[in-house]
Image 1 (spheres, one colour):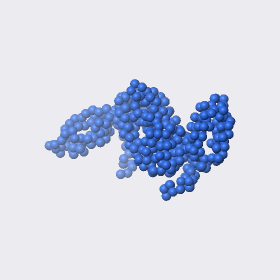
Image 2: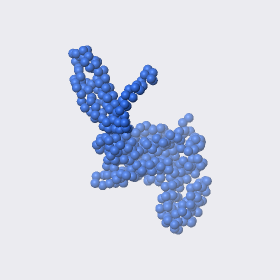
Image 3: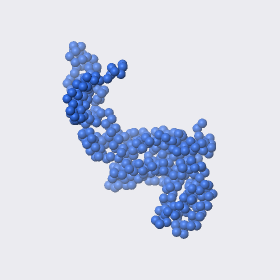
Image 4: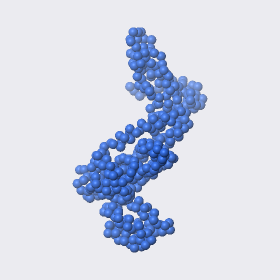
Length: 408
């Protein structure tokens, strides 16, 4: 069939637009576009019924065929055009199953996607309801919106249990705090994210977990789940000092190097410093973590302690307690240091998620929070199409440092 043979006849279009006077005549509530949609759908439904019965209306072949037309029923569809009432033909045996507008369908394909898109951008059920009514003049009940978004839960469960790649050179772990109702109380709960960087240097969210009680046991469960879903090796895990997490990683992945996030450590240290001294203290800490070698960093830490321990006695001991996990990145050249010395790769994700949930007072349960964050993560991860910076240089270094652990 040629392209021209499927084109709508121009003369027909001109004839339909003969009385056109304003955009409302075409796009309005009772405009031409809506009337055409109704006419085409009803015509297609009649054609489907004729095909189902095996004969056209008034055809003598239908006599004593065992089935016949049996009037019509009314249905109202919702879509970008607003609401559209249509007549659906029936047969006596009730065996007719329309394809263009299936039984039970009251919304055009793509309308549910619009609801999910609005929900993923942080709009509440009531806000979505008002938006659809304002833009499309469609009245959609809160229960309908909830049922559309609730259908995502099965998708979340499948995503959370999907198989993962065998090797992630780098993973980042961090959390976002959300308010979730628990009976008569509203609790601040931590939802933890794990982002992996695959062999191509592309970021990927590996999973989300709601921490009822954070600690070594919780983190052991998370890391074990990653192993059970197919991860067999991780080169470097970047964490922010979460209690029990480094030990859990080292238990399940004993060859993995755990790097504590320097940015988190500096922030934590500055909590003990008065405002006037912060700039100077931060500059002196910077001398430690920007050192060229581990030996130089140790010397800078000693100088820091001599200068500041009398005023802030908790800072240098905290660095010394975590020293083996602070200096991991110093064994690498600059191109790798930039990738692993901070969890910024995941913190930028968390900033995006906080923008989504900032207008919500609280979530009714854990599933509601996971549902929204999953949809929001889908939008955020669409931008992850390119490798992180300096990835080729990092992989060349990994091939040497972690000899034999990269796939051939």
